[in-house]
Image (cartoon, rainbow, N blue to C red; front, side, top):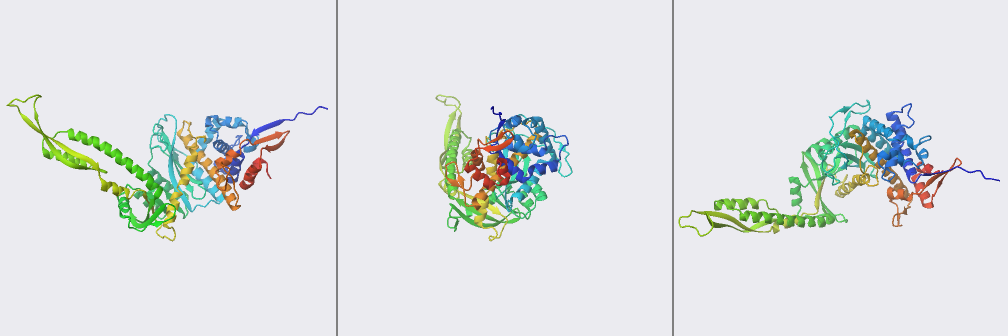
Length: 546
């Protein structure tokens, strides 16, 4: 009796079921389709396309967007996106039209709507938020277009395309044009809550002013806003109004230099037991009463001392050459020579002059022995020795390792000096998000799109990838902590704070196997099942778990 051959299909699932489960828990597909509408003849909705783009972005296989459909070849696409959807449906034309639609609606408006609803769904605390900015490099010439405003639906605001141009590059690629991304992230789980895409040459201080203005219009709560020194300008602080904030004070301000210098070794510092010492100072800047916390860091002090020594050596080398040139220069009178050496001395910071004098030389018109009637000319040459300015160097050494944090929360019981420092240290939540977006495995590590409008929409997709990633990571860590459990990290040690990147790597080589219409998931080890248990039913159902 011959056996009937069975049809077997094996499709890659890997960690994409986790990503799809978090997207479903957010309700992202339904929200996007509700906001942007569903075309009656569209086989794939805009929400499903956006979900596919996030799956691509978090695939960690460095597949650029022009190979978008190829990314899904061999993947369990129908299982992840919906019945009847094939890889061929996700072609670059459909992708481009979707990006155009996202841009027309308004990338900031769309992202903020989705992010705030996701934060509410996952119970993300927004009492502490962090504002920061970064640059994203692009490939290509990008000829500037005329500034035009795009008409958008009534529920969104008119927008204009960004300028892709040269500017200060955080990527250390000044040869490439760029655009900027301003984000606001929660202190709870580093979840991005706000996104703004800006011109590549925009100054951070000006950009933050725009963020604050839009932020106050669209989003109101009584939490604390934390930002870097770019926020600390007179215009920005005045625009903040009654909003509570913490910011680093630029040491380029004369007032900051005075406060740093006034804190002498005899002042009683408050140690916090982690290599930091604090002291509070009440002051007024830009007409706003505020509390400044002078922080001295042991780790920063060691690094600053090395930098100071390097600057001293560089200045000494540079100024010594200038002095040698000056000593060879002749002047018509002694007063001019002294004036020149005094002017040179005013440019010194860590060095000073000693043995200052003027050398007088008599010059004749020609070489050789002068004639008895030859005309003689007296020329004057400044002379000096360059040495270290011990007092100036010592004064600088006494204040290295210090920086100033400012807040308009004057009540120490509401926000102590230690809490001010801790909130600022948590500012790296935004920086971690930027490092994630610039990871070489991320599909937008190099932007290939040739339209400013589509690049703005792509930036929103990048931020949504970060949103899904941080929500998944926060959910897993919170569940592990509440259960007093952990999973092995890369070194095999148990941890309750794993990164989702590591978790994604742990889910490689998982397949959806379909045998004669019956589905099952292969390679679900006990460790993987444990992780899925903590991630919940929304993720588990993609792995066919009850």
